[in-house]
Image (cartoon, rainbow over all chains, first blue to last red; front, side):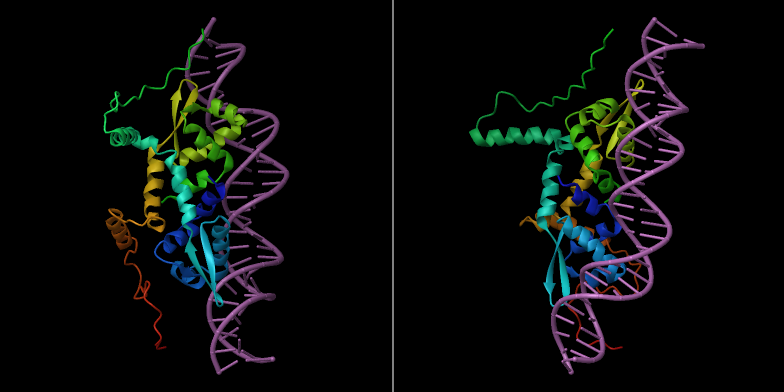
Length: 126
Length: 126
DNA sequence: AAGGCATATTCTAAATGTGGAATACTCTAG
DNA sequence: CTAGAGTATTCCACATTTAGAATATGCCTT
């Protein structure tokens, strides 16, 4: 996962910009107006978001239309997936269970069993 | 979505810590050793992660066992969900979610300036 | 070409974040 | 109580970031 993505989103105003663009693409001026930001500041924030690959800007005459880049959010989602077992362990196992069930049309010999043995004590010398 | 979460993850070493803890909870010293960090620096990074709610620390004698907080990642996932339409075709259950989100995302504390997205009106008196 | 609009860049000062080193705190063992 | 391990805090120097103001650049219309 790219740190730049998190850094780009780690600013209140940039986060607002992103959430605003979720609705639809906007020009720099529209973003500045909606969020009550000054134009130069808005441009700077957009540059950071663009460098991080969070948004892209398409030229239209003398304006720039800003829109979100799906890739950035997909990457975030993929990264999050590697943590998903933190809160979906049961579903994860169940999912695998159902997957194999569908695949072979035969229940595996090991039912979905929650196996959460507490962290083993790191030994106790002496 | 909380900016603090993004800020906490917007540092290379903190991101490494988080990805390390994905495997299993570790003590401060173990984290420092694995990532070749100095202990004070590690403590500082952990404090940021804890303040952001990304990790939690459980006291065990004079050591602290650090582990990821599922809530933080679930919140991230929920937030990401509001962008999921960017790259997914189907909006099954997502549809209602987005609807309510848009509905409550704009509190009526704005004067008659709430002109969201309609096309630019050609006629503009004054 | 001139004027006007939309956007980008530069400069500066203030604020914030980071690593290093030294040190303080806390718990356990004896 | 003393020693030591594990962790937290403080102070300082340095780099990065940010807002603001002024200004520059690019594009369209007349």
